[in-house]
Picture 1: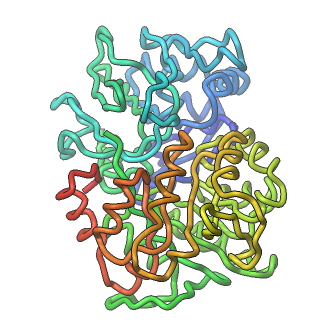
Picture 2 (picture 1 turned 180 degrees about the vertical axis):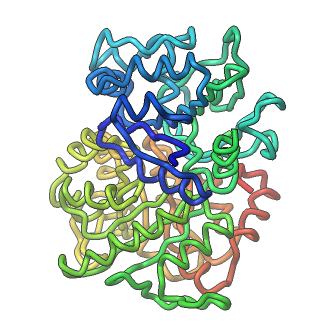
Length: 211
Length: 250
């Protein structure tokens, strides 16, 4: 039986690394873009591939968009990664150039914006950075010390703000931004890539698998 | 704060590691997958394979080792060597590489940088540049350092950045193999010239050399024989970085 369905939203990106990392910890996984398979999933990974607008448009074209929202509302464990995390928000300034007008899923009430240009701050934010202030109750971080380093690659982020109903973890990059959000129940969103984050990343994925 | 990265680099020919390695406790020191796994477990922040396979046909071995590595090594993997088209980039990414290094192919056809960046995202386009000091400046060399292009290195670095490169892998041919330290001069000039990461390569002889490169502005340090011959371990390097108050993942 499949434990985890990885949403393949046909964006031309590399989903193998998410799949490889989950398989390495013994998860039964299935890559799928079939709404029926996702509908019946008991756990979902929503990976980060491509741009914000393309992600949303592909989800809609494949008929996955509403299914995914329903699964999140049904309290099925969902792990959203990178652009997957961003897609959960209301909108992104990434759509200013291409895909103008494409809105996010609107599950988390905030906007995704680009890092501010500052001296010494290179964009994209690429490499290993520490994740601070995760909620000690957050089951995804079980056994993972505060301030552990995870691997990031992104130019857009959710800047630090109150997100009502969510607990957050933060990362410093010329500012403090939100690198993880948890709704206190089933929805976990990571701006970093656990599948590229060595031991702590695998630990996080294993925690998700054991939920 | 973003960590400075330590990147072991393996030269691979027809699916085998060349430039001998000197490991105890590894079943097959010529197996790139085993070596990659060894460095992963030792705390490498990323890995780099430089594919020096000459013939197109024999490159299939490279894809196989990338696939096998990506199944057990969960840090970013860059693969370079012989990349001349978007199709070459796609094949390496499909095999499981996270980033692709382009060297001579970018000099021959600079448009390839923009095409690859548009198609796959800047973050996976690493432009590898081999430079040699000529008087007061540096020239870009291609074909494994055999051919002087006459291009000024700093101008080329600026140009590839404007075309959409996500990262610069900067190898000093003068320093390479000397163990006398990285060329800090070109490293710092490059790092202050562009707003994308610069990976220093060539010349490291000890931990202090690596610290010096970071202090000169490098975002990452590429290491080969120093690690392969066990002259240094990644743990020793990171310890020294901590002492020097350089941000590192440990």
